[in-house]
Image 1 (cartoon, rainbow, N blue to C red):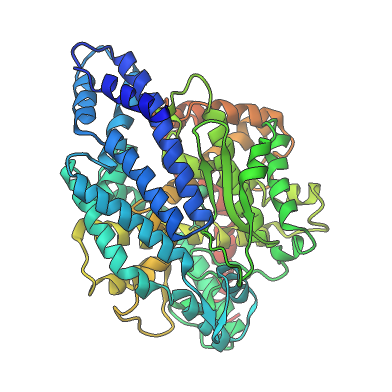
Image 2 (tube, rainbow, N blue to C red; image 1 turned 135 degrees about the vertical axis):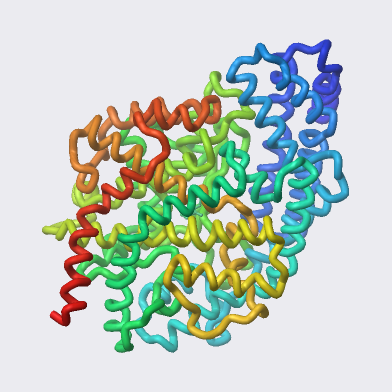
Amino acid sequence: MKQLLLVALTITLLAGCSQQNVDDFLADYNILYKNLWTAAEGARWDDNTNICEENSQKRIVAEQAYAQQLGSAELIEKAQAFLERDNLTELQTAQLNYVLLNAAKFPGTIPKTVDKLIKAEADQNSKLYTFDYTVNGQPVTPNDIVNGLGSSRNLAERLELWEASKAIGPSLKPGLIELRDLRNEVARSMGYSSYFGLECSEYGMSSNEMVELMDELIDGLNPLFIELHTWTARQLANRYNQPVPETIPAHWIDNRWAQSWPGLVEGINLDELVDDKSPQWLVEQGERYYTSMGFPALPQTFWDKSDLYALPADATRKKNTHASAWHIDLDNDVRSLMSVENTFDWFQTTHHELGHIYYYMLYSNDDVPFVLRTGANRGMHEGVGTLIELAGSQVSYLKEIGLLEGDVDQIQWLLNQALVGPVTFMPFACGTMTHWEHDFYEEELTGEQMNARWWQYVEQYQGVTPPSARSEEWCDAATKTHINDDPAQYYDYAISNVILHQLHDYICREILHESPQTANYYGNTEVGDWLKEVLKQGAACDWRELMVEATGEKLSSRAMLEYFAPLMEWLEAENNLVNKGM
Ligand code: X8Z
Ligand code: ZN
């Protein structure tokens, strides 16, 4: 019955453009889109929570149906023709642009390529999350590797853990190259410079404009990053009893991609704060943050249908171990896939994922058509949860919920926030990830260039080098999940950091009248009301206009730089003292 209804809808959608009213077209499209999305997202969910051949096949079938109908050449022509009309409302234009963007990812004009792409995506996802990691011949989970790198102080052991984390790369390399070629073919057939260009177009930007924005952001942060790098190299050399290096060996850093540098500040051990808590408490506390600001409780179906906790290493079921949030039916069916354990990193990640979930819930309202039930831009989507991660890592909040006691040195706290936050993350996101993916798609790097280019950027932007030379036998970029399954989008996280600091700055100065470094908005419904207004519009408004309306300012790293300004002074003084041999 549902199938018949969809066929009927497709026929109406494809009726001649001149006879049709744009609102009728969009109404039909929205129903078709919701149905096809729900089937495909549901199948993807099953394939990520229980990775097996059967679920992979079901996912492929659902995605093929989505692609065939939403990527049809007639649909593209119609949406383009409607867009040429000059009496469209902003809401109609926004929807038509998303109709085209959805079609551009699976264009019906090259069905064989699209078919191959859908299969290759499903294959790569299975390979990524059925890999058996081992250390000393023993099976380990990704969480075990993270925890080992977070605690071991033995360099030989660290090297083993770090190398274990990179062992998956070679098995992903052929699939990644095939995916790149297929993704580029799809994007170029739709007139984009590459798949990287297609993804940037969601921001209304070209590949070059995106890379320029990333470079600008790095330039702004670089003086602080250089001071932090100098301080860190000295700390780690001291810890491991080694000479102070110019570039930091990757296995000295707790994070396997050096995208965050935790565990370095004397007297701040965040994992200890949640040592006696259960994983469930972490997720519930995340929810409490949002409800304390007046957001609704999570629907019961969230708890019933989500897959929140870590599997043991010998589990027979395999699941995607990278955290994610899902909007299955573009309405109330919201779920999260995580592997929560009681570490501070997971405490932060639960706040992050629930940010996506609450954004889904807020824009699922009658004013936002299904096709616009997405973030104002993808960076904004990432920014909501990371904003609450920042708010959730403030001393005042941790004290209020009883996780932290006693006095805390504010500069040391800020130093830790810089090390685990944007100051080390932006060089990775704007520098290594974005530049590598740009080159991979735009320049079509060969299998003989991929790893060298990766490490060139890791050194240039992050000041980190591999423990020993990494030949092209390895494919270290592919060990990062997003390179495979969220391709050409990592700048979203960089943009999210900029946006969230702008939101945080506005909240602290204009609503709470407190300093951004110490403010606490747990329990403040005025902050919640303001956030709800910003978020409930989804993509029904232009993101640039939204930023100005919400914060009075265009996208700018001003707030982020100001947040860390007190640290710059402290680091300069510290590094100077050491330079002078004091
Ligand atoms: O992938 C994520 C989230 C899921 S949207 C956990 N993040 C990036 C990463 O892990 O590399 C959050 C920060 C950066
Ligand atoms: Zn996210």
